[in-house]
Length: 352
Image 1 (cartoon, rainbow, N blue to C red):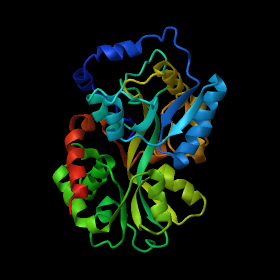
Image 2 (image 1 turned 90 degrees about the vertical axis):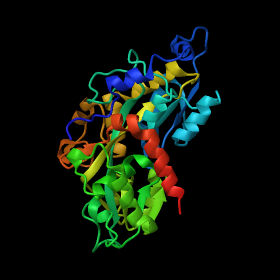
Image 3 (image 1 turned 135 degrees about the vertical axis):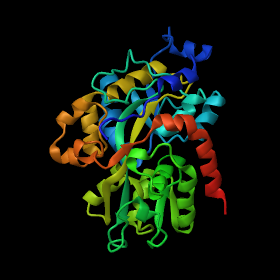
C-alpha cells in the first residue's frame, strides 16, 4: 500500500476537543525550571530496544547530555492508571497507533508540538495530533522451518483452518489479531475495514485450543525459534534477526499488516519540552536510517530510504517492493471502535 493512513481524521480530532486547562499549562514554557538530566522512555525492549538505544537514545545523550532511561513497554491500562493517579514517571512511550487511539480519546495523551518536531520529509500519516510515527513494522505470517517445513500455512485463511495442524502463536491484543483473523475469515486486503468482528471471533473459536499467546515481540520470536509454536503472527523486526543468524524461522511479507510504531506523551509528564526535542531527534533521516540498519523496520522519513542500500530496503515492510500484498493498520477505525472491540476481545481471551 503506497500511503500509510494511520493519522487521526479531522472529525476524530474535533471529538477530542481543545484539552483541559492543565494541558494548556503543561504546554507553556517551563519558566525557571531546570532542564532534566534524564528522560524515561517506555519501549518494547529486546531487539527493538537495542536498536532504539544505539540509534536514538545514545545519540540523543551525546547531542544533549540528557540520558535516556529505557523503561518496560507501557500497556494502555497501565498508562491510564498512571495518568489518572497523577503519578506520571514515563516521559515518552513507544506503542502502536491502534493502541494509542483509545488513549487519545480518553484524554490521556499530550499533544505533539510540531513547532519543535519537524514534519518535513515524513510519510503520509506519520503526523498526528497526539503521536508521531517513528517506524513502520510488518505484522507477518511466520513459521518454524523445522516443525512446519511440510505444512506451513501459505496465507491467513490456511493459518486459521483447523485442518492445518500445528501450534499457533498470536499477539494477546485485539488490534492486529482481529485483522489477521478477519483475513482468515476471507476478508480481502482492499476490503478489510470495517472488520467483520463476528466472523473474526469465529476464526479464533476454531483454533482456540492450539493458540499460545505472546505479549512481547521478543517472546513471539522465541516461541517459534524454540519450537513451542509451529507458526504465528510476528513482527518482522523480531523474526528477521533470528533468520539472519541461522535460526529455524522464516516469514513472508505477503498479506502483512503495516503497523506504525509511534512516539506519544502521557498527559501530565514533567519533562514535556525535552520530550519533544527527543522525538524531533528521532525524526532525523540519519537517525532513522541508523535505526533501520539495526532492525528492519521501515523509516517514516522518506529521506532515510536514500541512505539505505537496496538489500536493506528489501527487508523492510514499507519498501516499494514489499507494499504490493500488504495493508496499513487503519488508525481511524480503531479510534472509533477500539474500546468496544478491546472489551470483547479481553473477555473472549479469559473465557473457558
